[in-house]
Length: 127
Image (tube, rainbow, N blue to C red; front, side, top):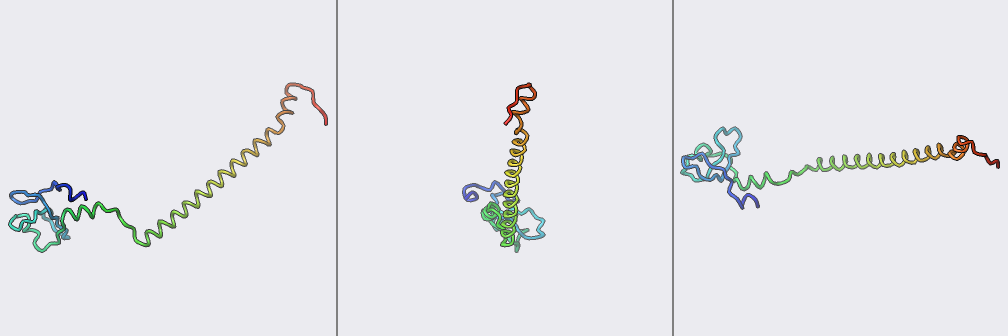
């Protein structure tokens, strides 16, 4: 794990500024939140009775991908289905448009030979 393989690089606020191991998670705490965990260090006094988290554990928690609630998963599935339906409909529209353009082009070029003969004053064949 990332947190276990490296030092946090964060120091406590004590007089000797040691490596911080704990972070304060107490709502409303205005003191510097990093503490080394040594009971004799001055960094611990402002956090007595506070909810504390190990930096390694916090690092792991923050690194974890967010999870969606059941409602969120269902909503994502519904939206993906709508998007898939829209894509399928647009693909059908693209094919239909392509067929229309082809049919239009063929109808315009049906008389190409006749047009060429008329413009060049070539003899016409009667059938």
